Amino acid sequence: MLLAADNQVVEINRQGSVTDSIAKQGHSGIYEAWRLPDGGVAYAHKGGLAVFDREKRPVVTHPARQGTKGTEANSCAVLDGGARFALMDSGVGQIRVVDRSGKVLSETQLPDLAEDSLHSRYRTIRVVPGEKAFWVAQYGRRTLLKVAEGSGEVLQTVLLDPMLKPTAAGHTAFGVTPLPDGKLWVATSTGKQLLMLNGKGAMERSWSAQELGLTCRYLLGTQQLESGHLLVACGDYHLKSVEEGADLLAEIDSEGRVVWRLTRAQLVDQIEGVVDSKSGLEEMRITNVHVYDSEKGDDVLKAVR
Image (cartoon, rainbow, N blue to C red; front, side, top):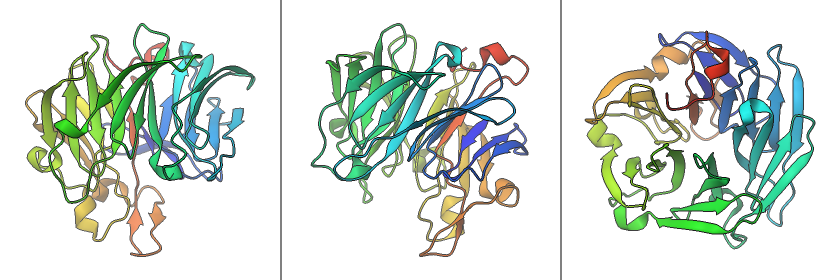
């Protein structure tokens, strides 16, 4: 499993032991990381896209662009087995597809959210199976958009508010995992709610972190496994106590039962987390997870098998 952990990328096995890492690159805000078929790694960080080969040498460095309120990239997708990459550049509201030379192949302009704060605009990009389109999450507006690559035409809009349970923390749209049958897994980070939506955007099932028995600050990136179980990243940003961020990853079955979890206690002594300036607590900040078979390199990008 490859974990995106804010200022580093960490690989762990099923037992929770760290087996590899990419750190000290000077990048922050690493929300997503993907293992490539050739053994390399691609990740999105606040400043743009970074791709490394299996020896951890830089292959692609594509910067985010300066917007009126600053620079912030949030998400990336791996295309054609690592021949191309799509970067979500929230600062300028754009998705750019680049090749391994860094050449820009397409630019997809997204609806203008300039009136929103930089951090509250867009969060996640995912390829729509079988279509030349992307799913994107409008973070603060709790809305999902399906947009056509290149033209930016909005093909579908899903408003999450009618489906969300009230929460004191408020909801934000974060994780989106499209499935081949058109269904979607959605995670609302601060609201700590998971939704399964059908192809028309209607809710089929929903669980909160409390109902799942998880002790965490957020529900973030998701991935559906071969078994049909869902793996969820539970970032521990802004901890007020160590206990409230006890769970970092959780595997959930179709009945909403947690069948496996990774805890802070397992990871905190293996990697160097970020010390929050206000609380003084060390945070792991796991925002996304990519699960793959380490012995089948050509199969690592198949999220649903």
